[in-house]
Length: 94
Image (cartoon, rainbow, N blue to C red; front, side, top):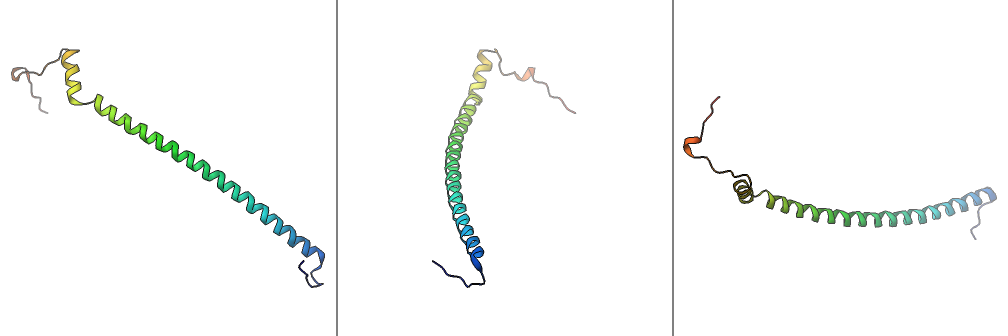
């Protein structure tokens, strides 16, 4: 046990022991909170990675659906569109 000079008294020792105890409880709580936050971070990073993969797949699918050849094929088959001839083109000037 630590001995203090008589000037400090028992009150000082009690305050010192209580502050050491409170600090150790705070350290344990802080370590636990850090582990919980790190676990949440890993889960969020995993979710972000999954969302990034889905976004990449969607961009690829979008570019496939919006490709010039596909749009041209649908315009010609379903909408019965065709390229205009030179006689049917009109130039508009401002």
